[in-house]
Each structure stands twice: as structure tokens, then as C-alpha cells.
Image 1 (tube, rainbow, N blue to C red):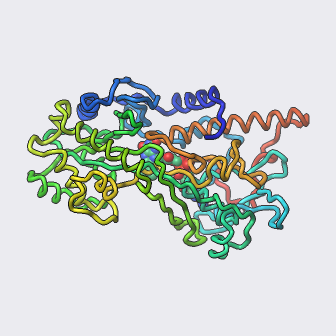
Image 2: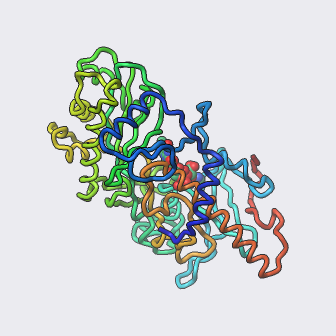
Length: 439
Ligand SMILES: Cc1cc2nc3c(=O)[nH]c(=O)nc-3n(C[C@H](O)[C@H](O)[C@H](O)COP(=O)(O)OP(=O)(O)OC[C@H]3O[C@@H](n4cnc5c(N)ncnc54)[C@H](O)[C@@H]3O)c2cc1C
């Protein structure tokens, strides 16, 4: 990890928490999951806490008591409106650099972006020593954009005919990771509340077990892939129409298995190709098996019994997962009896991917891109590992933490050079088009 200042990190977490994190109202299904986890040995009970510590806890949620979801966009309300202009639907195609000559250190001076009408614009930093481009396009977007701008592994960039290789940087796109998830859908004989993750079990192997309830939630987890799934569940489990269900899932926090990202083309609207190598390392697989053994105990627990059909076993529920189109991997008939194979066959993403511009490899501890001036990356692509739950909390904390640092750095520089506070024109980006939309 970067060398963070712990006190400032705590302050930044707390700032985010007070702005958009709530204590969830834990109801029947989540409560049974909590008690099932405790019965299965995921102890102690830690109550409501943001800390990721061994045992079972209630975590924070970004749903307020009225059921409205909050997001990082809400934090804009705390920005100085005179110091920020947000362009909606602006797609960045390229970061611009002052030099591309070998031996000279490149400096970022602007970007090229396309607006919602397809018109291209060039935006340049105003001339001020403190200005810089800050890239926050996420674990998929940031390495992709660096590569499209000529910063990445030279041979790969040349094979895609990137205009100019600005910096041969083999680590861009490397270290891609995703916390692999395996799940069991548990049809319930009685109504369940609609809930997303509230209860979190953190085992002594530091694996994360969570769940969500409500048929829509369960089925939306893997999007439209579940067409026809109800029928299958009904058939396999010999049930009549299933009206209620929950999902219990397990995640390997900070997997050792790592992969890479590569360009497919130079269109920022197209996803690059990402290989996560889920469960390539035996250590990750072992943790998955242990996690599933705990899930089996939870599903079979007395505490959870009223949310599971009495005649249906946890093994049967896992077996059903093998029949569902949740990924494109080949299935092995015996997988339920071989939890290792089950982990491999039914792995899913819970969208906690990270890496690609990691600290120490692509950016330094101040999140400045190594070998380049006036360019930082501040987002999940810089992470060496992602927390087992609520990764966005850490991403938002990082935004606040670095934002505060950069403001302080700028104030110190101004003081040193006795420069007056900048006017808006000196700090903002200069646009080659007047097509601005201010919010
Ligand atoms: C379906 C889903 C559900 C999730 N649920 C949760 C959850 O419940 N709790 C939780 O903690 N985390 C959740 N996550 C994970 C969380 O969203 C991420 O960890 C977090 O958003 C990562 O933040 P980031 O800033 O690194 O990237 P992002 O949030 O992905 O932000 C990157 C932004 O850059 C934009 N961008 C990319 N390329 C370009 C370009 N070329 N030009 C212009 N803009 C560009 C993207 O559109 C995006 O808005 C979920 C993720 C997904 C996909």
C-alpha cells in the first residue's frame, strides 16, 4: 500500500461516512443470516461497525432509511461551485503530452474528449505550475486510457498502432485483480425483505460471507442471465413456484491470483480485454472451499431454517448453481461434491476489480505517474488489493484524502512563492470549445 498517513486516512473515511453512509435496518432474512453465521462459528458478534474484523457484523450502507441510494455524486454538493465544472457524457480519448522525444520527460498538458454529440474538443491546462491532469477512470478505464495515450508496454501499443509511444511502461495494465465470488441461491418458503448486503461474516481466514434477499435482488445479481432460471429451480428442487429467495455468497478478499488488461482497439467506448485468472493460485481456491464449507453450515443452521425449504439441502442448492448460466466456464457434473471444482466452475464477479495502475508500479506514493510530470491517477486502479466488502468506501476515502493533500500542497507552494490565490481562470482547464455545461 501507499504510505498513507493513518490519521488523515481516518479523517477522510469519517468525512465520507458522515456524508453518505447509514446504519441499515436489519430485518428478518438478514437477521437469520447473522444468527446463522454466528451458529456456524463466525464469531464474535461485533455489532454495527465499519471495521473489517473477524466475526459477524452489521456494516454500513449507502441506502438511507427511505430506501434511496446515495453515491459519490452526492459529494459534489460539498464542492466549491466556483471551482468546478462537470461535463456530462464527455468521453476522453487521449491525454496530451508536451514531449514525446526520447530522453525527455513527458508532461501532461491536456486531454482530447468527445462530447455527447460526437464533437471532439481539446482541453488544456491553464499555465500554472501547480495544474495537473488527474485520471480517475477506474480499474478498467485508467490503464486503458494511459495505453491509448501512449503510456504502456511499447510492443503492445505498437501492435495497436497507438500514434506515439510516450513512455514504455510495462506495468500499465498489470496486477489486475478481482475478489472472486461464489454463491448459493436459497429459495425461501416465506416472504423475505428486499435487502442488499447488510450482514457481513469475516471468517478467521479473512474471507467475506454476505447475502441479499428478495427475488429481484437475487436475480439482478447476475442480470438477465437468469431467464428461465425459475423453472430450473422449481424443477431441480421439486418446488412449486418460488416466490421468495435470498443469495448467500462468499468472496476471497485480496486474491493472490492476478491478471492483466490489454487493449482490443483504440476506441474508449469499447471495453479492453481483461484476464483476472480467477483461482489460478491454489491459495485462493483453498479459501473458497473453506468459505463454502461455512456457507453450507449457515444454510443448514437452525437460525436460518425458516428461510430454507425443509426438504432442500445446501448441497442441492449448490448443485442448482452448476445448472445456471452464470458464467461461460465448462461445468463438471461432480462439482458439488468437489468444492474445489465448484469454486472454479461457478465463479462470478462482484465487480470489485482493481489494479492496472498500481502504487509502486505505475504511480508513486503521491499517485503521480512514474516518469511523467503533471499526471496523477487516483482511483481503484492504484490498489494492490481491494477490501473484501464496500470497496467504494476506500475509493471515496482516497479521493477525499488526496484531494485534501493536493489542496494543502498547492497552498504551501503559493505561500512559498508568495503567489496570490488563483483566480478561477488560472486553475481551471482551458477549452477549445465553448460547449460547456455547468452543474
Ligand atoms: C454493478 C456494480 C455494483 C457494485 N456494488 C457495490 C456496492 O454495493 N458497494 C461497494 O462498495 N462497491 C460496489 N461496486 C464497486 C464500486 O462501484 C467500485 O469499487 C468503485 O466504483 C470504483 O471506483 P473508481 O473510481 O475506481 O472507478 P469507477 O467508479 O468505475 O469510476 C470511473 C469513472 O470513469 C468513467 N470513465 C472511464 N473511462 C472514461 C473515459 N475514457 N472518458 C470519460 N470517463 C471515463 C466511468 O464512466 C466511471 O464513471 C459495484 C460495482 C458495480 C459495477
